[in-house]
Amino acid sequence: MTRFTDLTDAAIAVVAEQGMRGLTHRAVDARAGLSLGTTSAYFRTRKALIEGLVRRLADLDDADLATRSFDVPTDPAGFADAVAWVLDTWLTTGRERTLARYACLLEATHHPELRTILAYGRSSRDQARALMTAAGVPNPAQAGDHFVACVDGLLFDRMVGAGALTAPAPGTPENRADLATAVRRLLAGFTGPR
Image (cartoon, helix red, strand yellow):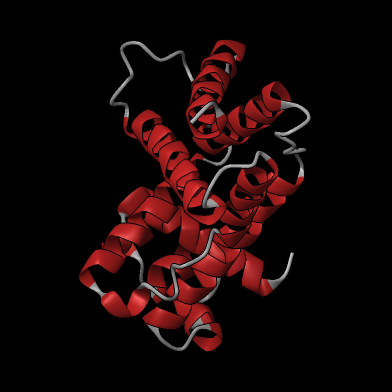
């Protein structure tokens, strides 16, 4: 691992545990087990630290997306299963990242200058737009963005436990099957008869 990875992974953990208010250079040093001042030597400002954290989140999310085949026109069920796998991963082993991502996005509502830093997730939007294009959906860019927003809403609902009474436990085959059913229904709404 590189020092960038060590520090940004520690920053993700701090934000997941304490929220954005807990994100300080000192807290990241402590979480990473490094001497005081290490984080500020690599990230001079809090904004730079947030940029590094978000860059790391994007890299990790892109790596998750790259491990799955997303091919709707020839395999809608396989696509739904792949999306369900990614969502279940972000609810289990990627839970810290998901919590940190949402904390960063909420921070941007109070600090507009962070919106450009947090404008990542292009690969999932690009994939969704390509899928809508291949499926012949009118205005595929808009439909792809809407699809990503719906899937993100599904993830958020599961993350915060809004559907906890009825949703299967994350990390189980039942949860992945339930998520795949939801994604298939979304896809049908976007790509079905108009």
